[in-house]
Length: 350
Image (cartoon, rainbow, N blue to C red; front, side, top):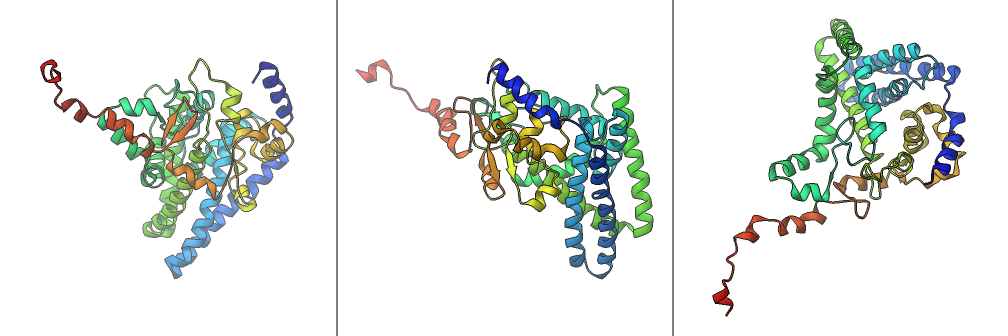
């Protein structure tokens, strides 16, 4: 895409990169109070039966995802007009979703600046190996990668790691503001959870909060995964990497049913978000619909999205993801067994 087309595309999206205080406040009101009410209803339902509690907890998990989208917008400074307002709301919604605001804000900014860049992987993204890297890797590294990309590990163990470990500790080179925000989030969580446990009992709290946050975490990882892992996703080396291509071709348009689109805060329009992170979630659909070039983004439906589970390795030459099975023959060619076969000497050849 030429620089002129890139500039024009940014200009077309620019009108939507503005927060609307009325819409932001309305979204807070139709998201957080329902989440709190559903938590209470789940508690009352648990007194009768755990099976009666589950439906309410699942719906509450959806509202946690929606709360996370608000948190996410705050990290981009797009949800509210003032920086301080975004920081305050972001920290509060971070507590509700178990993420440290400043830490996640930094890592996510790196993700946006390096998304689909093969030379800048490793921060705020999902581990992706190219075919050549996988073939040349040690058996231990290949095993680790296969373990990481296993759906059980990614969507079951992944949420536990994110909320219990990754978000609770600072990186070694974190600045004071980031460290203090993580400490504050952890302290508030301890106080909040201690109060809730004293009111509900630890068993009820663990069952309800555990169910809600586990389901919400799994859904969140799924959304992030599906929006960058599809067959013809764009990845490129630094010398050829293009920001706009990374946004439009390296991020999918996840076309969801209306209810799920609302619950997920329009994050399915991920290509629009990556093109212009300052567009708040409630303007993403309008920006997409009014900008024809964005219609070229890969569209994935709820049904077709499950096909992406099989994509494990990226093949830069063909610019596509492939399965482990498709690379098996390459591993056999590089197997040490081939070298162990006795070779004919020059005399034997004669």
